[in-house]
Length: 290
Length: 176
Image (tube, rainbow over all chains, first blue to last red; front, top):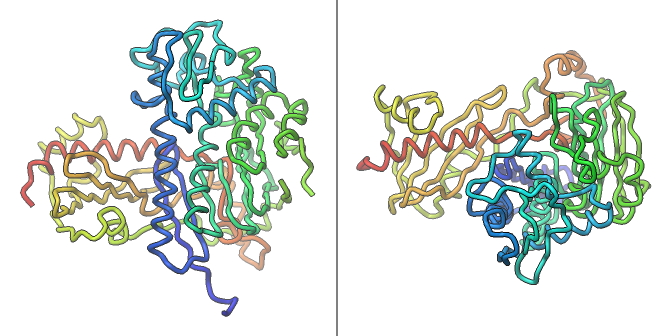
């Protein structure tokens, strides 16, 4: 085998999760097999989109928002898994990470008003979500938004589908929340939204990277501190490297809200955050990269 | 998670072309993926001025061209190749509709906006002009992904809405 042969690459893109999801597989010889694997991976993401969307009227979230307070609502295994991770992080951070900020994001015009749903109770928090074996019970009326965590989960599910199909070198990229398969090295440039004479590049093997910034928002952003309901500093950018994209995705929000105080939570997940402030200076938080 | 964090001087990066284009699938490849094993028959359609108006009314999306590149499957499904205007460039895509008029799948065929705003920004890009000498890193070659460049798929959603209106108002009544 000659090392100078170009590696065959199959790359496809679909509009999902409100962004463009790109899946790339390298180094496989059977294109039909690769396309089937990529289709499976997209299907896994589409399933997350359908069940966890705030917008889709048939999603698990929309059914929860329509149900009377206190009733058990059956949800998919994936929705339960994401809520479980979200509540664990909420508990650990004492509510800095809180998926019940939906009502505030609706007020800001960042999410549409859910149709036919009960008006949200202003005092509702993540503590009012009860997870059952096969469903969810809300103890106060609320609007849950999984926008800060479900995309990472979807990327993980797609990566698992690719791995199950035997793909050894690949990347799933959902608009900045991405996960690599294979030792690479994979190089990922960070678009922090701040023009600079240096560009940050993360070089990694098999891992997940997620990036969040408030810089794209002019007035009120999408990132709130769940304890106070106040905006995180918008003029900063957080990129988190972690084994699983669900953790990388959610931890970017914790890093934006807490800055250096997010370090213990990052370490709990074996994650590292690279946080850029308004002057363009980068700080490393959590697990130190070797 | 083990990784390296590098700050690369912008001057050390090279962009081969001002706009990066990634071709994902040809129309033929998309047809084979979206209607496996089926022979699709081309049914080229030109919308009348009247039809353009009703499609725009029904979908609330502008019709870019009256020409509709449509194919029909033996079971009554449709394959349509179209494009939407992205932030800066046209984005060709394909839509597969099943025999009941429901969306089977959407595939983006080509993307010419692979990089984030910062990289797309002309002033930022101007820094690369003339810097084509040997370089340690090439965008889109050594660096294949950008994190943080969330690309809205709003235009794609609009494009699909437009094609579904064309299906409802025209294709569903066409004998291919």
